[in-house]
Image (cartoon, rainbow, N blue to C red; front, side):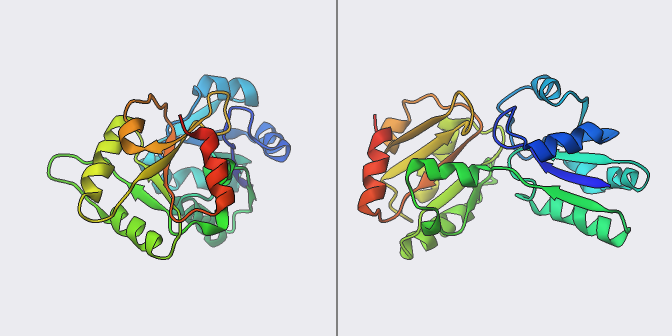
Length: 237
């Protein structure tokens, strides 16, 4: 059996069902390239009671480890939700093609956690991703998505490339949005679901002075309902 298991948002965020599955597996892999974990792998191993083998992008996309599930129980652990990336869908498709039994065990993701801001989830539009700029490589497609969402009065969840410091993310957002879309205030969600969770709401100029730990995401709010506005005031400082 091949298990695709979500870890949730903190080191103890895995479900009871997920934990039971991990314990009976002969081997547990961890997809560790799509997000910066808010804890050390050693802490996770202690919580699970199981040795974890980290896989980079190339190893995951090779799908070779799935073959092991033909003869034994294998777990693939994913931070947050197990199906947040299309790469993981391909693993399930491989199982179907190779007649390997598979099971998905869901858990909470940042998409669930951002509801704590008070912004209504059904008012979010398309999610955007902001890659790290390098040299002359400065893609700005995320600004187009933000603009499209604002036009339909939808909030935007902006996911930030792994390893990008908060200060750099604000600099890129400011530069990319200049003369294209008016962004006045942001919501910043850091280490959601952990003891170090932090939610900030303010103008970009004031947020630049804040220290924000990874992993974090940015929300560009659109037109606010009065309840959303009241909820966000809790995080303005």
